[in-house]
Image 1 (spheres, rainbow, N blue to C red):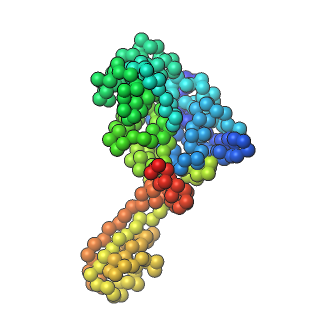
Image 2: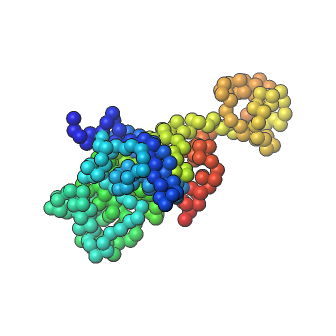
Image 3: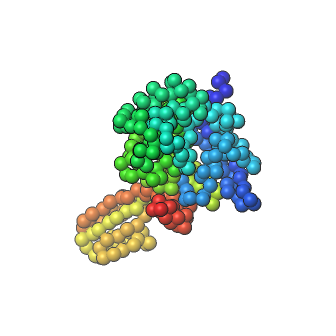
Length: 315
């Protein structure tokens, strides 16, 4: 078997990773498993331990304890040529042309420059930057420069791409382009891991997520699995204000005039609907609202962590 092949369909796996700095625990027993070919989101506020965990997974730093494998290898640096990594701290040589910057990043992962240069041109042209191929990085906008660095991350055609806060600093248009690129990479079989403190990106893109707070993994699983921890919410408005049907609404239903909001009963809506109809409540509107990933995040990580995430997203 190829030494770098994923084990049992996993592109990356970690068990009980621990890392401390100057006596302070940055990551406390993190365990995660990333299916090969998936888009995997790592959610948490700034300082939660996302970057430290990713760096341990990549072999940039070693854990104090715990176990990790990357592309089936227990020594992550041995498969670095098959990995593309975009760190949170961006950096390009300002005097380099866009083409040379991408080719240079590929060379750092073992791609010969004579192959990297034409690939760089192809990537730049494919992302609407054809006229900037030979222009220096210093002449590009912030969004363009970030796109160049991202293209340099994938020019060697890695099997695994790890993006640390890739949406940070991008406007809405460039965020949309990045989402499209992540989807294309996954469609081609590339595994993509990205960290973010913006839950909406993960909800749109990911099959599986890990929620990290205070250095510990509070949840790992499918996006639907996270949302299914919460009951759907019923929004009801009736024409009548009173009647026997009120007894069949949940006791903790929140009421404002003729409008009611409550969790969908575990038994389903049938009994409630029958009572509303049989007793002439007069249903004006009735909708069932499925909880979003943000709601699940709040339930799993707590209000304080969710509030910090919102603050980070605004900064």
